[in-house]
Image (tube, rainbow, N blue to C red):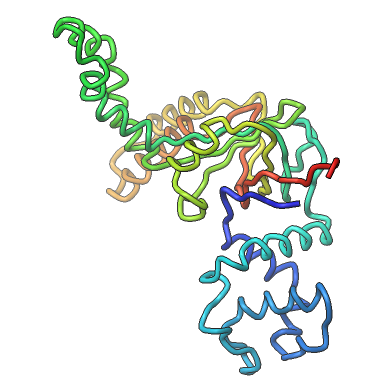
Amino acid sequence: MFRDFIYLDINRVQSIIAQMQQGLLNEVMEGKTEQATGRMQMAMNLLAMMLPVSASGSVERSRGSSLSESRVLHDYAFEVAQRSLEEGKLLNQDELDWDEVPEKGFVLVRGAAQILDYETLRRIAKNFDRLDDFFNSEDSKNQRQKRRRENKEFRESEVLLETFFEDAIRVEIINTLGCGFVGPLTREHLREDVRGLIYKHGSRPRGEWTMLAEVSRIPQPEESTGNAITELLAGIQNEETGGSVTNELHKVVTVFNAFQEFLGSVSYPDIAVSPIAVYREINPDPED
């Protein structure tokens, strides 16, 4: 099997290996890597790459390159991290319905994927009139002005996108049971920029995609961020005024944090996750 990664958070991968393979780390720190063979030797060599210099000085910098600088080892590091989670019984790989998702832990989910790039949407809103003129240059001036009046709200949404979303990008994978897993992606961990990904795979990539992620939050059916904001505002209004400037600013930040949650957080029935890797599996043809 070959994994075609489009996203790999190597920092999270390193953290998993460091915490789950503490025994191997001790072996590496003590300079006992030569005693291991086979797959264990490969894992220990990988861990040695993560430690440029050990406490005892027995592990040296490997060719001037650490794991974070050597993309060649990233894919194998993912293999070590996934197996570490499996061995530690922290990874749930079954098809999960909403009520089966663990409140904490890691999941390996498969299904249809979608890439949501808010930065592209913000740029479109900012340049909407110029784009409209370009694509509809043969229309009359009155026709273009009418469309601008009709699309005023979309153009003005730029300030909303810039304030609360900025350059956010998210991935959503819906498994065969209809359960959606949504999480933010960090652009630096993408294998290529979003334009390249959408050009190659489309905004809704075809086929089955896989995501390794840590469960962040499971919204409940009775939860409503809108109601939470209303209650928060009511509570603040009932508080006595005349506090310090810091306290007043604290109230403002609290309200806007709740408003940002209202706009950008995952709501029931989707599951909020922290993606570690997103990829598609390429398997050999059984007939071959």
